[in-house]
Image (tube, rainbow, N blue to C red; front, side):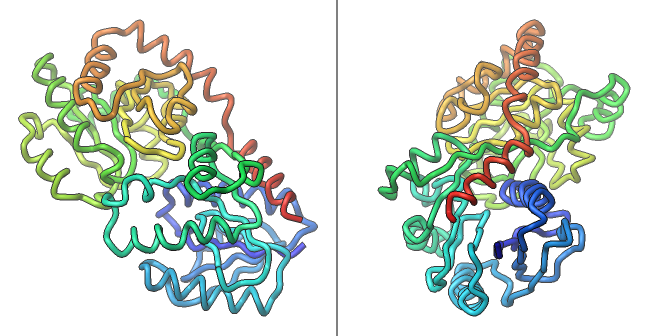
Length: 373
């Protein structure tokens, strides 16, 4: 079979959630299926590390698709012209964008519909593009894959898609994350948190990640304890809104918030594994990979009790109401004071994490692909 793949999010040193999904699944799928030919479509120069096997042919199509107008041009002209000329068996899109003008079968991985429920969290043109095109992509798709049962039901009900046409393929976790030695934890805290324990957030600083309430909850926690605990925030200020900015400025203990920016995977391994706990409390999430990363790193997790997060966390996390600052701060206070509970959550996380791996993801993804033929 000839399978063309949208790989525009495979950018060296800039992989995020969907980029990691693309990388980890395609690396396995292409190597495990040498009898099939894959064409990877990039929108810029690519790194050779993304050409995982001999059955891959890379193709660069312009322009670089990083803006709604360029999304449209790339998918509806550059990609469509390529697909209609090449006539592959399938166009596979790990980020959910399809080509409405292409005539071949297409499989979209739609990770979540956050833009349908919280459109104002996105810039005007981006949300207009998503809300107009993604319903069309969903109905254009020969088949849809998504990363949680929550997202499956959300896509089915929001876009009136038969659930039988949607496959759930859970995310996995990079195996680099693991329990650290006491010495490594000590040196990491010296580098990143002034030798103090810290709560950790990992992810883009996007409104739906609920950074505003996390700041407010941390302030309440600090007022209640008088501790020297820090809050380490790992990620880029993707949509650093005025609301998030005001919440930070108004913090009494903002000097105890440490921003690292984006970290390499090797750096994040140490920062994650040295944390007192992960505080990951979005109000909307299609999956939540940091939850798995924390479990693999052997630290307890505080996460939200809505959307996909209870599905991923199981009973191995403290679940909080993400809309309640007090609920978040109470959980932080609980884990800070109760070492036994921290150890219980870590033990449960060691079991919960076994349900997820990139090998399982890739196998489920390939089964979804096979259903299109």
